[in-house]
Image 1 (cartoon, rainbow, N blue to C red):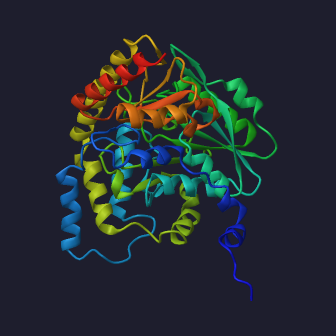
Image 2 (cartoon, rainbow, N blue to C red):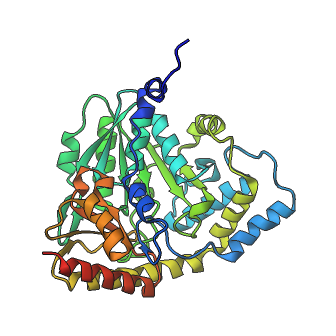
Image 3 (cartoon, one colour):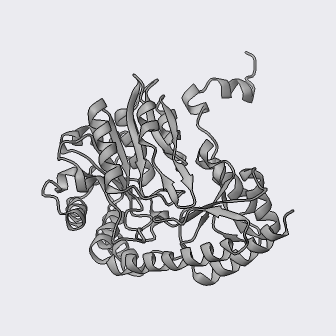
Length: 396
């Protein structure tokens, strides 16, 4: 029997698995992860650890012996807490615990939501630049993400509803909507959300609504939501996570909001992937929802201050273009004379000791841009901005 080579083994894999792209963000992170003195602004998390009152809830659960299999849809207490949290934000009578399903991260929520509606050769429309994992999840499912560029100007990024309508084809099954947006900071207005919902209803499409940054809105108490305008039976799948609001990125716990009639199907998909989220993590999540508003307000205030630091400092160079973000906690900017985002991000690591994400990681519409996460301390951001400004002004 002939010995198989690594190439032979590689070619025996499913085409959908082989098509899963390497993360353009992780590539840069790996270049600078161990570089001494580097300020890491490349990934979507802040520098604050999970608050102790949340972590202690998990510790109590472990001490009480909650280490066994548990409810696959989520423990009843967490589903009730999610319903109460959403009802308080959106004041809609149809929001009940039966609409919520606990997942092993926001990414798993996206993967399951897309698996529900996108199959082989199906298409999902994605306003772009966009966080790349949704498109990759569609590819792994055998489908294809179709990028529909947002329109960029100094006044802000805007949705081109006509371009989105023109992109609908016979195999289109869904629209992925991330607002507030990672990476652009675009926040869909209530009117834009209504236009999207009207379009989806007309063509029988699903909406996968990524409202992870819904509380990080700087011009209003919260961002507009599909919850504000939807009917109870609209084809909308909400994906969310505990990661951003309550500094729980490493916990890997999120949720799906969906019509209760989808419950068994969603439970089945959870069963055949992770078989549920650990009970002690869910206890921590309940505490985050019930006691975490002050911490969340602190995070939003901190991000608002960070936004001011980086936008003011970089604008002063006279070499940077951006739209001031209205939500999330990222600045998406371009530098005059630096069209190659990947190359520029790698040079920033080596020469400026600042870690940024290349815009190409967020789709073709991100070419020439860089993403900076400003959910950090003002001191770190001021130093990072000084380093970036020096580097930018030194370029020919």
